[in-house]
Amino acid sequence: MITVIGLLVIVKGFSKLGNFKSELAIATLISLPFASLYAFLKPVVNIDAQLLSFMLHYIGFKVVRQGAVVALPNGSVEVMASCSSVSPILTMLPFIVVLLAIYPVSKIKQFTVYISAIASIIFVNNIRLCLLAILINKQDIPNFDYWHTGGGAGIFSNIIVFVIGGISYKLLNNETKEVADGAKHPLSSK
Image 1 (tube, rainbow, N blue to C red):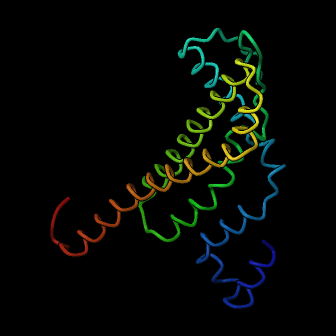
Image 2 (cartoon, rainbow, N blue to C red):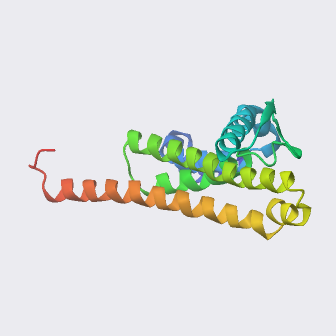
């Protein structure tokens, strides 16, 4: 972060730093240590545990939740910070900032992209947590290991990237069409 600011000051000067808000936001997000952000985003772990117990309950399991621990009849899982939606959110935020720096969109669309991305990350990750809890309940440790730390975990990461990419494409593509339509017809009313 300090290097980026230093280079911008050398190349453009102090007065032009305000023109590089997107670049500074990206550098800040990339340079922040994840460990300090986990403590800040700890409420997401509780949201994950609540949504996990909700999903399992409506699938048909008898679920008891105490904090981040979700107990099923044959086992229990604890939603740890490293398995919660915090890590995918922190991984995808710089990507979203880059997208929004590339495409000129209104503040409402930016807010919509951020909220829909975070909501989709939480939902997809909770499907993964639900699968892991069901595997623990069945005492199926080899499949649990595959979906927790093996190749299966990467599948859910790819799903998150595709969902966020699709949502962003849909929202940003509509915005660029609206901007292009407005540029072609400056006298048209909206």
